[in-house]
Image: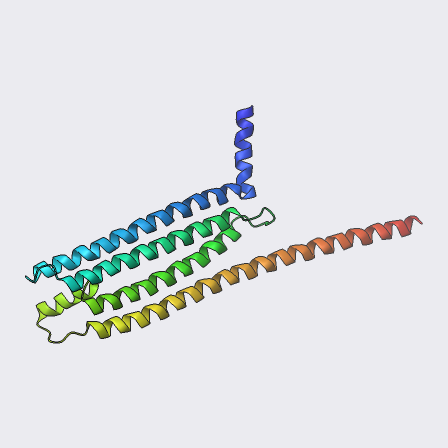
Length: 222
């Protein structure tokens, strides 16, 4: 019987929202660590790609492109740490959600929606910064583009201009993503507040009806 009661208590915890908060907290922390590892792997792949392209051109590993790729790795590490801290911070917010809300998943969803906008902004902005740096040092993606133009026989190096344009577009795109998801989170909060206020109004109206009925019964008895 104790085992069956523990199962019922566990099911009740889902209705209270504690289990959702617990698993969402754990998942956010795990994803934060995975994002940090992925950012380092991506930076190392850029460094390896820059060296490989230099070898394909028969020029060997050049110092300047490698410096740019190393800077890219440093940026990736910094961004990976920032993203991991962001995920862990949002995990703490989910964990600290109170029991007073009647909507179990809504507060968690609002936090996650805002986090998607924040991660999107950081991703767009950092991608633009990296392409800009790579366009200066001739490493990473810009070097891949240069190799394509080299194979096609196109004269001229437009990597720097492309890097500036990419930086501007990335920052603007990230800002749009951030604003959109924050706006979406506010809409969710607005609907939740409307639903909460409607419940309060319905409760107050029903209470007033009960009171009026009681008064009418008392008057009739008198």
